[in-house]
Length: 248
Image (cartoon, rainbow, N blue to C red):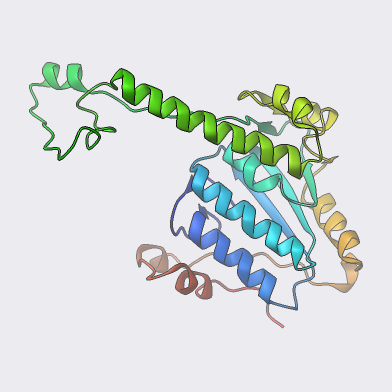
């Protein structure tokens, strides 16, 4: 799960709310798979997509499949969101993680248009139709609406993080507020469980699944071929079935 988290479908290895969720569902439905290591290297992205992936990780655990998140260089904001529901989290000492918070806004290009002599106008059908238009600034009412929505997302993020990490919200919230932690700092504060890399994550997943690493095959989800990445899928199911899971 690498790169920015987006809605919809992305090639295997990237993070799409629909496509990554479908791959996790396929793992849940495949009785050959005893545990999953979720490798995360992401600075975040869509809150909706992150929440969808988190739910699939929880459903995978509910089905009796242990999940260990293994953080790469960065697993922050949405990257932390998709990792936090795992049974255990492994990160490098220098991994940048946390950043439990939310940010939103828009670019306004009115002055840029004037400098370049461009004409770009909106045709709107209501007072909120141009809410995210780059041709106008937020009104006070729009700012208030945006801030209310961001407060809701922040409360949702911190509440779920506290639940997933088994921390009281009074303990978790001061660690949030958009703050970024190294792996060492995150472990000291209970945001992750272990310091290490993929080898440790695989060992922990095997132990949680009650199997010996030497007795099971460790396979990566294969990525789509070069040409397939330019051929849009009709659905997340179609995209997921184009990806090879471990063979028998």
